[in-house]
Amino acid sequence: MIVSIITNLNSLFCLTQIAQAEPQVDSPDLVTKVPSPQNFVSQGTEIFLNGKTLNIPWAQWQVGNSLRLGISDTALDRQLGVELFTNSNYLTQPIDWYATTRLPFAKRLVGEASRREEKADQRSSTPVSVNAKLSRQYRYLDITDLAKRSGWQWQVAGTKLQLNTPATRVTNVRRETIPKNGKITVTLDRVTPWKLSQTATEGYLTIEANADPTLLAQFNAPPPIIDPNLDPDDDPTAKKLAYKVTSNKNQTIVQFPIVKGHRARAKLLSQTSLEVSINPNLATIPDREIKWAPGLKWRQKWVKLGATNFPVSYLEIDPRQKGIKIRSMLALEPNLVGTNHLIKFAPTTPVVAAINGGYFNRNNRMPLGAIKRDGKWLSSPVLNRGAIGWNDKGQMRIARLKMQETIATTTGTQLPILALNSAYVQAGFGRYTTDWGSTYTPLQANELIFTIQQNKVTQITPGNAIGSVNIPIPANGYLLTLRGQLELSGSIPIGTSLTLQQQITPPEFDTYSQIIAAGPWLVQSGKVVLDAKSENFSANFSKEAAVRSAIGSTATGKIWLVTVHPHPGGKGPTLAEMAQLIQQMGAVDALNLDGGSSTSLYLGGQLVDRSSATAARVHNAIGITIEP
Image (cartoon, rainbow, N blue to C red; front, side, top):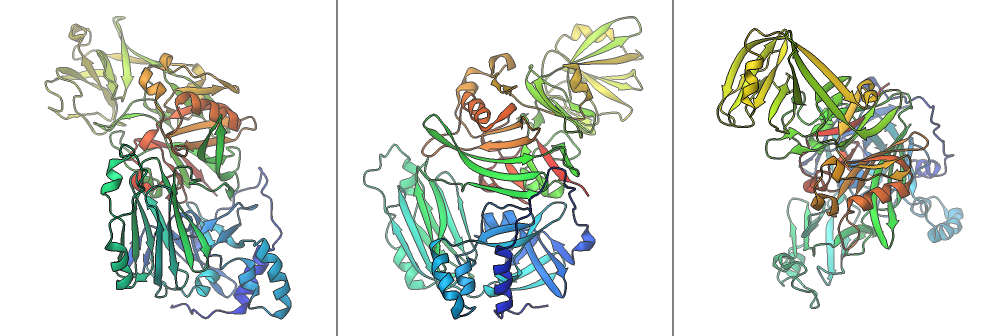
């Protein structure tokens, strides 16, 4: 069914009433009521926008006689140019869309009596709130009235939403001193979706609109304007990048160079214009606190550490909230070997939110630290590094974790196993189970591989070169790999019966159903306990300033999934700064996670801390589910 584009006063009155509605406060013990699929008329994860496919979750549901259209809130914010503001209730969401959803615009058509109020509202406009609806993975915002007023047309085709916006023209593009401390102002003839993305050296403003050929020629002919005071050493590559405006198939892209350390941010100036600012002191994230679901908040703010402000994006979870569960995740389920982008594998699972987890070998894509899920050890801890353990009762603990496995023969011989399902290679025995995969390939030359079935050695296979053979891992046992110390091979000949013993330190961690190791340990009982050396991190790693991820807990039992990006004009925090920062925010316990390009914070179908184009593959993650 094609939706009518007729603007009507009822929708405007509806928007006004929503904006003035009494806020509802969600309490910690409120039961999360997640709608079942039967509550939705149709759902999907792709939108065909003006002929282009976008990975954006959407849904339709019935309210009385009205069929409502909802789009994922984070997708609206990250991909379609709708700005989200702090809310007081997860069932409603204040938004801004080219300033057309502010109350003055709605009242302008209501009548003469309201025009006096309009003047007062123009001094302090209030964003309009739209209704929100939760599913198991997404939070949809009801944009039905906004879409109608903007002239959108849509039609459902299976699991795809075909969405068409009215023909829009870019009437002007104005630029100032690019790439340093510059601005780009784009003027349109009507509202239309847009998206801002950037890499370290380039920015892209993508607008659903066409530009006149004369405008394109005007802005593509000259070379890029470069700040004459720019030090060539700042970023030589920036001078080689072109300033371009291209237009094709109802889409205009403004491409501009960015000096390393600078950032771009777009903001809506009016109903027909938006502005992109580029400078080193830019607040790239807005301060906001969004109640996303009962027991789950999405927060963005700037945290000052000394004279430096760091942009922090994080999720606050109440693990005691009914329906919320936190669990360990693998990038390539169900195997331990393999990596993927969080933005790609999270949507294929039931999680609503996730953060990247522990370390891994980027070359062979194998784990380098403890992973335990649903009570089962998938990989062992290494190097005395920090780990976090938790259960479904809301209990959590951080500590430096050790696992000692031992195999014992009937003759009393005891042999230590140095690692379980790990890429950390040492001289001695390693153990590999079917959680590693169906087969094992030698990680080191001249390994000796023992096949154990029903606690008995059934086969011994030499692994000559790295990757030389693929040895099946038995479902009723495991493999032992012996690296170096080949004199130990005589201790367990074929036919030897073995007993496997395991000891966890601290012992309490053996009772937690979920564990992820990373490190270093940052905060304990409100005090900084950073000791990277004791966790076998290098001095260079300890001093490096980088983008970082962490998990922490508060005095009230809330859990934080935290990401911190570079401060304006500089880099991300060092480990010491990260510890101080998260302590200052109020964490009583905190653990550093894998960082740098791995840092990724996922919520409702989108990365909310960075552009997905700049995020690297990860091996594992910590995910949040909401169950009915």
